[in-house]
Image (cartoon, rainbow, N blue to C red; front, side, top):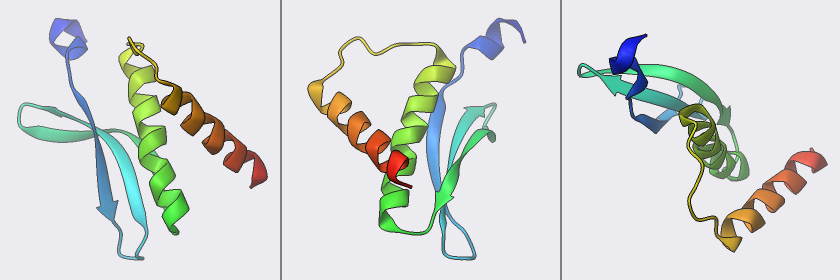
Length: 89
């Protein structure tokens, strides 16, 4: 992997599929090319589509190994709401 492989930026990308669903992927860009690091999922309804970028940001934090310096109360409330919604389904 080397030193150059350790320093890459991760981004979220939303794609509209032929079926009308929206896919969210974590991508990295190196040497002018995009590479899919991890697909997060796809959503049909607004609730699913709004949830995917949040999950993607959490996964980027986990993959990068960096913790947030400041965690706001708003972040914890949003996490609680999404965990409650995932328990309902």
